[in-house]
Image (cartoon, rainbow, N blue to C red):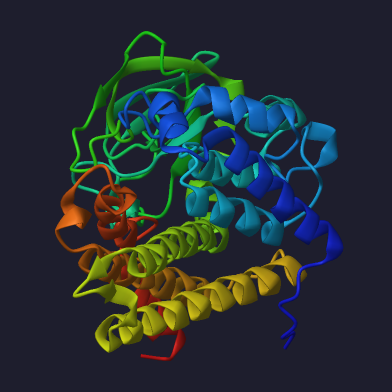
Length: 386
């Protein structure tokens, strides 16, 4: 078991470069206000494209497709620093999930198109969940019917991140020709649609966070060519699950970044805020609260990077237990840390002039991303022979 968590010189330089550009491009409240249109948007195409031009996106994407040719650890660094800085490039994480599937199963043409787009700062979306298929995603009913030269798709998807700004949406669907007696994991496919194509309707879902992020996607006789299929029809479930390690680590790294942001903000506030004639950070109740926050955040970071290192050394192996543990712990630490930071801010935590107020909604929903934490615990339990 490797236990060295030290970054290489190249990884350290990459982290430093990210910190510099985030501080320069979105380090002030005024910059964030402008880039997000008053916090109405969670993704800035302007900032994303700048990062792409600087060669800072897609560190795990091969150089031939515009990336840096690194690996999963470099992606963890990017995602952690992105969330820690509050950088409004929220669509990148999902784009990275799509890129992972394309790297494994895409044709050369698909790799050139999709991987190049992600590395350049473009947006890719994937549509799995449906109104009646959330945690039980394999029960999905969206159908793809074979027609001359391509496929015709019908169905409804929900909670689809970034569909309204995506260049493509990768639809997880079921081959209509699949035998009705087949197991629910059989006959699945992954097929791209253009969000602006005839028969595609994207409808925003209003959320407590306020920013535009998730959507319904309605598919009504949407016809695509055969080359819109990723991998093989019927192999969709294997293709989907092959990327779950990375998806859960992506969520874990984002959670670590958020927890760090909340902790550092609360620490600074505790040093600056004076009550009863002294900074509130000098009171033991706040000191202990901040000490616990610091400890939990560090443990979350160590776990995420430990599992990322395992994946980097064994890229074809599955780590269901470890990846699920990382996702559960990191997202729940982020939830606890944001809640504690909110309390440290007192009444000001409720005011939108303070960053912590905007962190609360995301900290709550992150535990449901990539399979709820209850599902993750089921997976962990199975690996324990239960």
